Image (cartoon, rainbow, N blue to C red):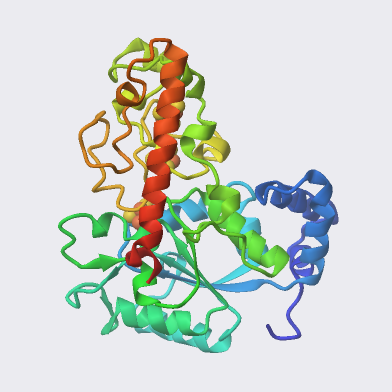
Length: 363
Ligand code: FSX
Ligand code: SF4
Ligand code: F3S
């Protein structure tokens, strides 16, 4: 970063915000990062001394849902994150220019901030050369070029993390996760279709605040946001444990809060922060609204369906946990829940061990 550039705090003041507002922003950030309120000072000190980080955001094969989710983040406010903590130097969705102008803008920022920028990638990369050509160059080529001088590479969304919907059978484009193209480059995965806005801003805020990458699990996901399954924090969990399940979508018990497991809920095998942070500024999330989790942050979630159907006979994947089977012979309703839980944990471990060995996710 050039010496003359202001710190984040100076930028905030230059934009007319008071120190009081700045401290409020630090408190909100500390909360987003999972820090104790007393650590607000640590965040404030970091933002007083650090400069904004340039971010370059590339879109590959995607639906733009990740960008849309990001620009609607409400906590901390997007305008704070985008304009005060990071400098979003290139993002197709928000760029006013088009065609050659946009391509030139990208080349300029890649050169100007070489070695300093964080690269965010949304969408999968096709290996079939008939797809995703931008300005005469393949998506894979553009991705490799942008990653070559990035300080960090963040895969925002299930598509860039795991391949996502485009990679679902029959995968006509040959869609792959970005790790398959950027072999050997460490990548932070922030899956979700799309990811929760506050999770994306939280990861960026961590990098800006601490000058380092957040701690990740064995699949490269930030532990702060992906350490729990939806099922662990679900608002319907007490009903699961009590063996009380909604039997259909028009079952009045669904509205009463009964567990959605028999309607195909994938919460027991899905790692994401929806049940903790919730969506739209903490208002709700699919399960709270009566919709079973479809596991949108997990690899191959589209092929691991069917959605909304309790299916017990598929091979052992994230969709095959069966409370009747795991709870067989146990009569007390609560014991059914506990039995199911043990089975789910075993299935999750199996699934993870498989994933760890899957070259696709770690290429
Ligand atoms: Fe869409 Fe992003 Fe899903 Fe994929 O989100 S919401 S298809 S994860 O790449 O734009
Ligand atoms: Fe919640 Fe789904 Fe688990 Fe039921 S199965 S407790 S709805 S996550
Ligand atoms: Fe996706 Fe399930 Fe959350 S479907 S949005 S991971 S509740």
